[in-house]
Amino acid sequence: MNRINPAKLLNSKWTALQPQKREKHFLVSDVDYAEDGSVRSCTLEAVMTHGEYSIDWKELNNTDKWAYGWK
Image (cartoon, rainbow, N blue to C red; front, side, top):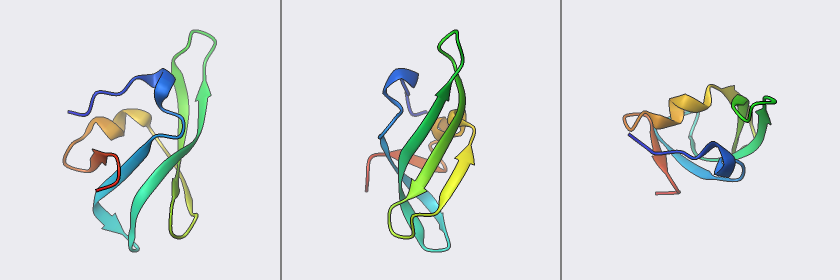
């Protein structure tokens, strides 16, 4: 399980362990916070293709799919 601090989520780097469309490395480009400080939405940007994907930020905890940093 990846430990994630929601306050440090923006601009963090992630590696997809099961790449789709040759997109392996991602950067968290946008995070929308609720008034209570919880994360509403998270946008990942693929480094090579610049494709953007909205995901549930808690999916990044899954170590079968995501690794923290660029590997």
